[in-house]
Length: 626
Image 1 (spheres, helix red, strand yellow):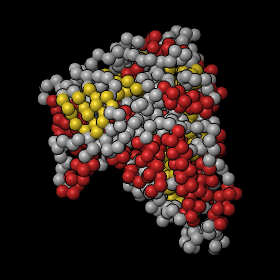
Image 2: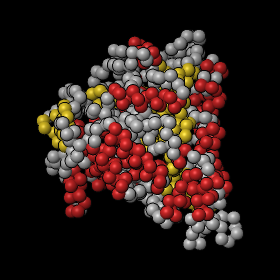
Image 3: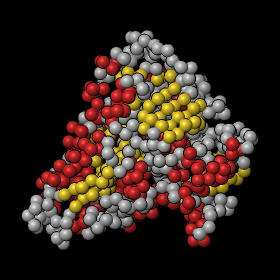
Image 4: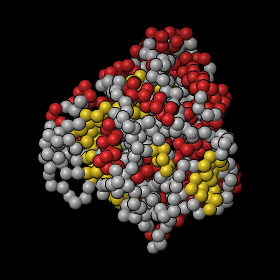
């Protein structure tokens, strides 16, 4: 239920997965299953090093390599390749399914969905590290107990703690409060009923309330991978630079915000490529036939550079300095894949393209505690709705993003349950005339004749927008300023790096900020965590507090899927539009590209771990298909 911030049992029932995939594909206008996939001829082979190396670039810097301290997409792409959760998403299954990873089987669940018992497979070991003093360290249930407790430790200031509070582990919040009240170190040795090891390999979680979709929290290792206590205590304050897990890769080089290198974990257990694509999924069946039974990981090394500007990142790929480029910037889409097909000049170089709608939405938040844009009075609400109506999102999608987006009509994200592409709300409207009318009606008028509106009390009306310095964001900022100028609202921009804005946004220090939100699982509830008052300082960056929404959120989390839950989602959508602490703008279409030597790639939906499922092979002869 934890959404990933950019730049979930029964919840895995086939009927719900199938609906989510179908509507997402319909929104893109593509055949389902699978993404729109264009392949091209590969160039002649060239000499290669002995190591199979995958090279590409992130468009923003990581924040940490400690799972307890992250929530951004970039850090959460690194960590699942090092740490392992109990469960994973099948890499090829469409509709999406959940399978055991370190768990021996699917969980045993009580009838009330409050007690979850999971057994860990024996014989899984952490990678070798000085913290283990030469001993081979086996993964046990207590490692997950310790890892989950780390989110509750006040010293870690975990951005996902608010989500864990919402999950309601019995006794865990009380243990945290005890440490805070007594101003003493968090007591990791004190057993709590909500998360404990019944024996060496059995983990049991007890929840305060029913959570039918709780397993989705553990289907992905980006946050809930196991961390060994000895490692944390050995490295202390430097733990984020020493990630030690049971996963397929290990960190070998890290220059913060610049370069990260990971290599195959030599201690990784025997894991073979195994996936279950749908029978009518031709692409998935081809990948399964090609790789089934291969030992993972298939590559030796991954090198990640941080290149924030779109043009240098694109040129780096074209120049062969990167083998893969993720999320091709929209200004290069027409050059890369005009009309959804790889451009002939790139196809001649063996470049492939992968294009699909992704479970991502872009949005702006308004700080509800801000005296300028916050508040719940009618005039306060009118200002936010006017700003939303004044934003030319159709132009953003059409012109700035080169058609690589569809208008967001609700907070719900493609591929998640209850997402309905046929729904229309004020989120999807661009109506500057109506925006002006709202402003006039509630007293936001130009009193001194300078061309800019003042607040109803006569004080200046000035929006301060947090932003980044990259070219893509500058283009978005220019459009926003032009839109606000047109309705008479002055704007100013405060530039900082993305991680700094994320930190400041969580702390309530920004008036407004634009960012992306990625669904972390099948359940649509994750998006509405942004409206849950218990998650202020974490998911709820708007600091929105509304008892009616809190009550809906709590009930949504506790009841099974069905008509009652669908009706509650509709009520939540109505409140989200009425108060507008967030302006949802677009659902993105993503384009990835790679050279022919990268084989086996298929964009993940909710998860980030994919490096061990691809191979690097010698380039094929011209005219062949890899």
